Amino acid sequence: MRRGTRYGALLGPLLAGGATPALVARAARGLGLPERGRYAVVVLGMAAPDAAVAEGPDADGARWWWGTAEGSPGEVEVREVAVVLLGPAGPARAAARLRELGAGPGGVSPVVGSLAEVGAARRLAGTALLTCEPGSREIVRLDERLPAALLVSRPELSTRLLAEVFGPLLTLVPAERSLLVETLETWLECGGSVGRAAARLGCHRNTVFNRLRRLERLTARSLSRPRELVDLVLALDVLRLSSAPPGPGGVG
Image (cartoon, rainbow, N blue to C red; front, side, top):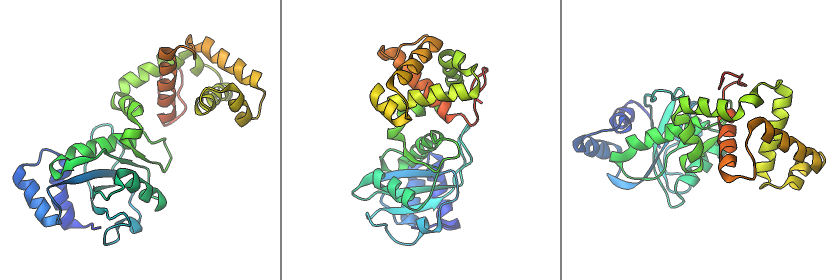
């Protein structure tokens, strides 16, 4: 694993996207990387731990090259970016390694097949980073967060979705709103089981049922109708990704 001015200069044109075949070939020679291979890009929202940039392949045989790249409009500030020539375990192992080292927040792109594609992969990794909950140290793969990635890619639609679906809910006092949101989240995590949600929340199952019915009345959406449930789940994602508790006007 390497970092430094020389490597950053070679990675920069690749990460920016649109590099010519000649630039790709030059970077491949300078970095000692094959032009074609299984690559992923990692974008971190904070500086990488020193252990993440130690010399040599990691335990999976993956090779990491660290640099920096300008963020796209709307992205959080990017501190460091890594191009990873993946080992057999693929991007899931790369993400796990960063979690083990205490890196994060960070986003990991899908696999691409050549160095020429790492610019597109960097943009996708940056989008994955935007799906991390504010203040968290999550390392997430884009393929695990596709619905949320769609939302963060269109913030004006996300704001509208939140206002349209959760508008009446957002007018409640924070403690009351948090109780209903927590109940919905727990019910979803429990696979729609009121009994399991009640056990996790430490209350009677009728209490959970009544809270969910109240949420349905406030949002004018039924948890038993798949399309309306999708609205509620997506609005919940927007609420989770808000940097501050929103008011009636939309995402804070």
